Image (cartoon, rainbow, N blue to C red; front, side, top):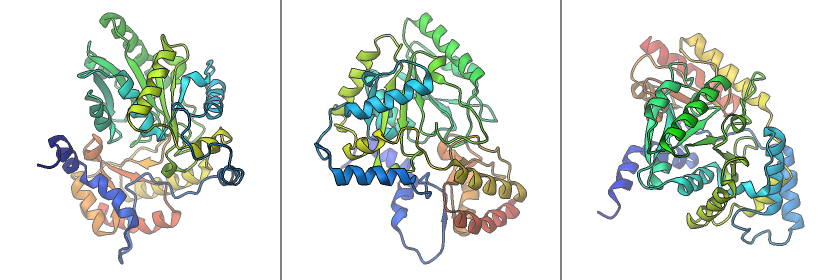
Length: 388
């Protein structure tokens, strides 16, 4: 066999995910309504294009050269200052590493902390790449179910903690459910992590995947995880707040009051190099330096959420209104793959919940054009009527 057994198994298990990206450039005669990928169709803010033009036209020295491995100091300073204001903690550039997107941040964190056989807990439903990222670096992925309403089941998490536990990944607002974990549940989780860490004589990290931290609705306030748990490492991205996922710019940040915080930051810089990222995209480092706090118009997403949610509810779908991110996660009255296949016959493309750790659901990305959503609705109604 030319390829490894592990990669072959991964290809077979995630062929549908690969097709999501491959299909982006297809030109079928039949009209389709593709809600599979969180690839926003809302344009970036006007300020993004202004800063991009400035960077290209003024061509600062070194614009197309490698940056320092941890990122340009100006970019890291800008991120650190923003974190200090938002989280009320003394971040400096030493605590920040610029990365190739949020995925790059997650991978350098896992590479920096994992020894072979270390366990990392993830919460289901989950972002589909977590198990692969953990396996990339010799870790063992353990899945813990959230409650029926997608809230944290702290007792279930505590039951999986062991001397081999190195970290738990928390993604809130959550992909795929849009749920936001409450401050009370996060404090309860932090207490369990601290207790078990003392018992085992180890540090259990909380890796906060903040991909959708800036995409929240209805005036909801996110609990501040950095103030709840000292051993927190942040993996963040500008993809969602600026609607620029293709530019691959993000960062990792270490809690400034963590024991040995600077040693961990140095480890992240090292893993950024040895994993082959070398440095985050330099042009984007210059651009985001001047875009701290800038984000897309959330009213655009909220309008799409409400339009889609209200329609599906009226058709008989059972679902919760997401508090953040840009996904709906409705139940299906039959097997989710069967339901998905029937939707595909109507030109409606979605993801089955079984691929995301929770069977009997669909993930629908509503970050699409309003016209696309409106045109898809008859298909959603027809298939629900078929099975209801």
